[in-house]
Image (cartoon, rainbow, N blue to C red; front, top):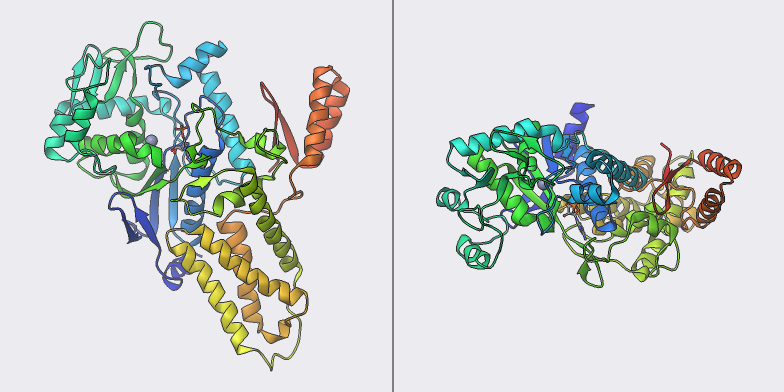
Length: 503
Ligand code: AMP
Ligand code: ZN
């Protein structure tokens, strides 16, 4: 199995990816092939993940899936940020939500981690191999701070510990990932306020002394406080993947300062560039503007499934939404609209129908004497095209185009415009395997019962909500059971009724 898979890497050509660090498309050569270490910044679990977040996690799911398909032994680490991600006013995002909802911070963390996992499962995103959390790695974070202090890259000030960027920048240029220059950053930072403890306004917190009313805090020799957000990723990536690993990923908005700070922390404490390749996914936008919770233009995945939003005229199935996301390259922006989704739905329906037909298609028994060599070559070339498109920086948009070219052949065989006896069994098998493997295993588009949105489901859920509101528990139980038989679990959320497919 392992040898066969290794051969796959060799036989189907070379994978290239765009390295944000060098800004070039480079040949992918793992540090310790066939092992591949990949770290992706996960969600901050203080609210439901929105469609923008989902786009990023689907993009890295494709990368994980394709690397595994090629035969690499991937260790995929994606963290859960459950402390330290601050709002502009300095308040911890999770603490704030806990304060407002009058819940324990860990209740907030649990609730939104569960939601995140539900969404990932619904959209067929494979789980990472390790999913570490920041609060689970406090000792390691404290250790890294101590190393940075002892090496002179950090200093204490009034119970907090900061990274000394001026000192660091003398040895290593800070900002090389984002292309920012220290001198420009210093000029811009003069306007920032509330930086009293720092030697330099640009310095970032490794450990922050907590205000008396701050909920999430731990005792260290510096103060009762909490770790800085950038620190967790440096600590957890290198703990599980080594001082230097292959791929570090995240959304483009994390390039600066988060990822530039990660590089500084790793070089400062471990003398190594953490990742050989940095990969950044571009943003999902609405009318050209980044989808984000704070801008108030974010959609929840569930809203799309139910068609429960003023911009939508219908619901879309999870795989139709996944297909929509994959119709653009991960490094391009993708603008979200009802029209764009409707367009994708047409394509997706075609694909799903083609796959259904193909699964039932059997190569006929016959004496394969008069095969059509040109047709065989055409099919073979399209199969190669699919591999080449994925090898070209995981170009899912192009891959889908080639899959549709293969589907045209399938439909011609189905409608008897072409005869399966025109091709040999090996070509038929390759066509079938390529279409099924690329659609289901690599792009992760799995068969669905209802691809035209969930209108019936929506109706049943509304009925369920009504039964709950009127305390008709007999009906509630009945609807729950009915949906369970259809492979769907209901999740009672605070403001709406959520659901997920059963495994
Ligand atoms: P957060 O929970 O805000 O830390 O975000 C989790 C991941 O989603 C990060 O990798 C972000 O870069 C990414 N992300 C946030 N907003 C968007 C968006 N509109 N489009 C694509 N990715 C996003
Ligand atoms: Zn991170």
